Length: 354
Ligand code: NAD
Ligand code: TYD
Figure 1 (cartoon, helix red, strand yellow):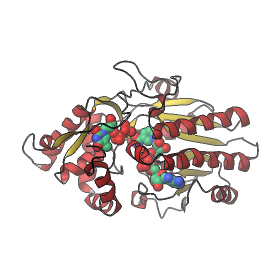
Figure 2 (figure 1 turned 30 degrees about the horizontal axis):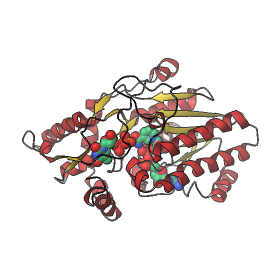
Figure 3 (figure 1 turned 30 degrees about the vertical axis):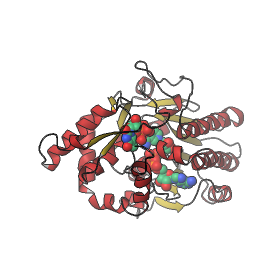
Figure 4 (figure 1 turned 90 degrees about the vertical axis):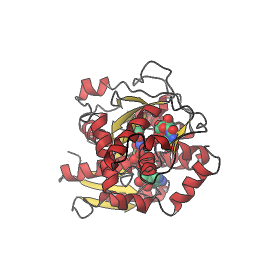
């Protein structure tokens, strides 16, 4: 049984769902959440667990090698679930360096600290690296990403994630560090920072701002409700085979424009607006450079080997997500003040994207 578990990036979107799940479900585990609290980290996401005796928050930077070594020495972690990352493709286009520091060097620091701390005694130890389907690059109109699809990342974000995946696998091969990697499709749900498509558009509909659809809107993503991702992570952490990779996805592909139209219609109904009110906010803007056409995960391996599949349909998940943002207007308005305004201006109002 694993005792001291380090979860990195636990104040972010997916990490907060993983921390909440593990702290509530496993009272015999000590959960340490290490997070730098960048713009994307928010301790509000963890208020239900913050006073639990099996939870400790560590504010720190995975790029700080001596700090990382010191916490491994102090807390003797048995396992790592590594989610901390710079995660937004558009930001990786305007500031790629930060992505290499956090996603590549940060992961390297964690691998080195784990290797040193575990000193070749790998019994019951695990380094679980959370990654993305974007490492596989872009699909055409057909086909799916499988676990053995060759890596072909196109954005600085996906290139940095691919690099970190390779390092994890290399530490497994070279040093026998026990690892598992999962590559997941696009997540949506509560706690997501309103820079990604779904929460950005929910917030813009609430505030009656334009909905900036990149290019012709015919780009396709495969969407998974974040709680289902957290459940998959729990399953892989406990049952995944060391050295293996599992793709996680919902077999749920949507063209951006179809998704945005559905979102508009659901929001109109929930806000009591007349039909098509929100659709009128849709505005086609300049495309994202290097925009991947289509992502689609074949998640049969995790279903067949570990029995995981999504529990929530897209319509249910999207409806719950909208309700969450409408109910948590304070969470949202706290975020969309201050530096968010500068980000928004730079991304959408200075000709960067439109
Ligand atoms: P997020 O941006 O919401 O959260 C990232 C968290 O990491 C934040 O709390 C941030 O403060 C923290 N962090 C950033 N830099 C750090 C540093 N140097 N040291 C310590 N903490 C730092 O990201 P997310 O969407 O929750 O993604 C989590 C992980 O899942 C990432 O590794 C991402 O690549 C992967 N992933 C995300 C998606 C998605 O759709 N969001 C899909 C597949 C995989
Ligand atoms: P995003 O949520 O940024 O995730 P990713 O780029 O990692 O897939 O974007 C999802 C899709 O939505 C992607 O095809 C880009 C598109 N998009 C827009 O059309 N407008 C926007 O303002 C944003 C943020 C994304």
